[in-house]
Length: 268
Image 1 (cartoon, rainbow, N blue to C red):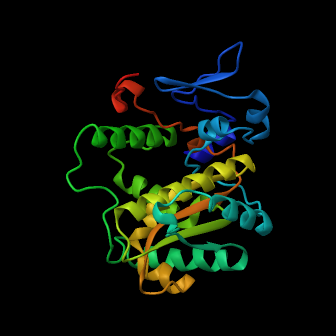
Image 2 (cartoon, helix red, strand yellow):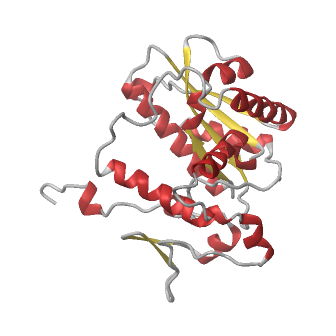
């Protein structure tokens, strides 16, 4: 269905994403973020605000290599992310080039052989997810599959689409983030701060990303491939590369809860 839309030259409207006249703005759900027009055209971010406004989970990448020296620079800069007690608990493995081709081939084989995954080491989502978290997850899924034209009853088609995760949506670079098994929830939050810092730096450099906790389904496969020691646990993967602007799913802009729903102000 994607191919048919492309052949007709049709583009689907971007949900909850509106450019306004005057100061260039985009409305993301109930919130409004200012976007510099030059940044939109060049696909780079010139400020932290622009990087935040344009960072999203890209699910279609161009077949365009990413410079290794650039990646090293960005990973080093991201290490300025805060961590409690300066533990810096992140352990990273970055894969590209011929090794990336080998990883994609291996992932294809493993997913085909074990579509349900291996023995997972943590739950990506809590069991019996309740509102409003359940509703938010449901909504972003419906928005995404709506763009793809895959109805809810087409379980096989949805599973087939989900399997694209394990090919990194065509990205030329993969990152895996590990943490020492002796670390606790505070150190896991440190991982998130490092990864967010990296994703914002990627936007500044004109790159996009897609964090992928789905790789927690295949911890043994990835550990064997990258040589991670037993005392480290795989937290997440991440696809990195240049966005394919013609991929319909990249029109998705996930909604955000209004500020009054997530923040309570005291004395302000």
